[in-house]
Image 1 (cartoon, rainbow, N blue to C red):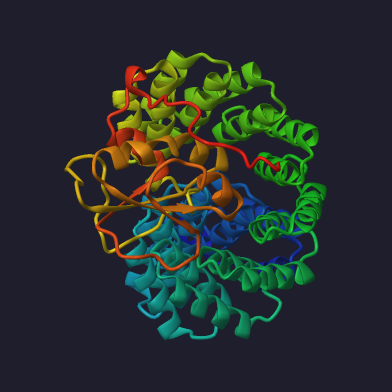
Image 2: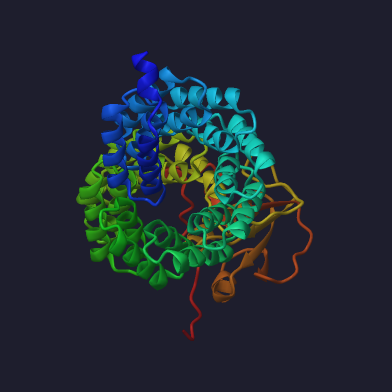
Amino acid sequence: MRNKKSTEPSPKQNQRISAAIALHQSGQLALAETHYRKLLAVLPSHPLLLANLGIVALQMGKLEDSVKLIKRSLHIQPNQPYAFNNLGNSLKDLNRLEDALDSYDQALALKADYAEAYGNRGLALQGLYRLDEALASYDSAIALKPYVPEVYCNRGLALQHLKRLDEALESYERAITLKPDYAIAYYNHGVTLQDLNRLDEALESYDHALAIKPDYAKAYSNRGVVLQDLKRFDEALASYDHALVHHADSAQVYSNRGITLQELNRPDEALASYDHAIILRPDDAKAYYNRGLTLKHLNRLDEAIDSYAMAIVLKPDYTEAYYNRGISLQNLNRLDAAQHCYECAIVLQADHAEAYWNIALLNIIRGDYEEGWKQYEWRWKVKSNHSIRTFAQPLWLGESSLSNKTLLIYPEQGLGDYIQCLRYVSLAEQNGVKVVLEAPEALTALASSLAGQFTLLETGQPLPDFDYHCPVMSLPLAFKTTLASIPATLPYLYAEKAK
């Protein structure tokens, strides 16, 4: 009888309960909490009071208290779908996602058309990376209540993680249509456009987010990245600085700001920005890596090597840190240590053309021409190599006799490399090869001083018929050059007498 009495308030107590609920609904949480607690002192088993006090605790961030209070309410009266939903919210905020999911499922078992529970259930599933299930839960929420912008926004995030980016955009756009001042939806819309490399549109979305929420540090930060990708470095720097005004302890912003300062050729400031990022986040491998690049730019090679090494300690599979550490070691003539770094990069990325090419250079420097010139062919796979040309005729690398055949020799890389390798033209003709020699405009006159019967053409002129082709820097490989067999008939070129 005592339990029954305690849960059946008097008319006066009902008035007090209504007053407490009114305070709660008006957002006066502290006052509502005080009133609920006073009422519970005389009605300790009142399920609505317990549940509502649990909601106040949730809203005030007292999550453990919220869980205890709502569970007490449900123990007394189990058939409360709204209480199960709010219990799920408290558990979700505590990152107890499986327990939260169970609470949402119990809410839906009691109320099958509970749109809010479906929406919250989607968030829990998303947190558990069960993205397809999360998406289905959001869709159920939308089928019941098609006008809730937050559900469309959360649905967009699930689609974004599933790499269904066009659908994610549509979901964010629906959220924005329903709530035109929805800064987070604009921000997520911008992130998705950034992922699609639609940078100008992404910038516009971030600007919308900032117009609504001028202190939105993440929007300023991402806006900076977009401007950086658009090579608008001064604007990117300003955007990062705005981000730091509103979020001064963001290691990511300091790290990205360093990259922009590096691009603006302000290396000392870039270095200071990386150092600030590392103070805020000492395990930031990328900041150490970029710091190494800046130190290398400043020719502080030993420090650069140490910075790359720290990046590798923090991220042992950091291919580019190994590679760039190798470059700094090579610049200090520490060739064996450099080669070890390049080999580590290749272990991590088997097709790392730049690492193979640098090993080729090391072998050529050491005089190991057999391996060096063979590995030098990796240059064609280097991303920055824009001198690649294609022909219907096969490439010749010395594997077959070219007697009575016509070989096209053409320039690549620098003028100095071309001059060095012109010595092979005579060697080819001595082997019965007809040579068509293509020369850069600046070196046509010099190339004409070579002895021989070759056909000389300036680059860009129509090519005659030929059987094979070979770029000049592949000639040492094709002729199996060693230190002992470098063609050394000197001089082989002559300047014009008038010059």
